[in-house]
Image: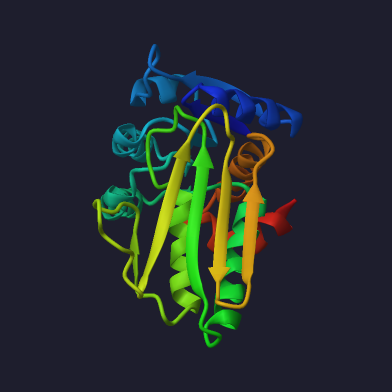
Length: 246
C-alpha cells in the first residue's frame, strides 16, 4: 500500500522503517517545511495517511484528508477535546479514521489486564494510583495512555469515580479519586504503572516501552486495516480484528 506520513520526527522515521519492512511505499512525507495540503496529497496519492504531529495540527490535517477522501491514522495525543469535531468531519467526508492514545499492541492489551484487575479488586478495599514517565520533550501531561488507564480502572473499581492529575499545596487526594502522577525526564520512551494498595499488601502492574518500534508497528497495522472502511474507530476496540488481518 501507499502511505503518506504527516510528521517526520522520531516516530515518523520509525514508522517509515516499519512500513518499508512490511513492503509498503512511503510516497510522501509532510512536516513543518512541507505542510500537508489537498494539492500535495493529490500530487502524491496515498492509500492512508499516518499522523504523528502536534495536538493543534490534528483538526487541520483531518480537514485536509477529508477533502481528499483518504483514510487517516492518528497517533498524535493531546487533541481529545476536539474529538467530536474530528468525528463529524470523518463522518461527513465518508472516510475512515483510527485513533489511539497509544498504538503499542502491548499497551492495548495492558488496558484489558488493568480493567480485569480492577474488577477483581473492586470488592477487596484497595486504593489505586497511576504513574507515567516519559522523555522531557513530551508536551502533554498526563499522557493519553495514563488517562485511558484511568478509564479502565474507573470501569472496574467501584470505589473510584473521579481522576485528578494535580494537587494544590496542602490538599489531599479524595477517597473516591484516582491520582495520576507524571514524570518528564531524559529520554524515557514510556512507562505506565497502575498500583493497588491495601493495608496488607500492594500490587503493581507496569508496562514499559523499550523503544518506539511497538508504537510504529501498531500504527502501520492500523493503516493496513483501515483502507476501504468508513467510520471513526478506536484502535483498542478493533485490536482483535486488526491483529487477525495479517
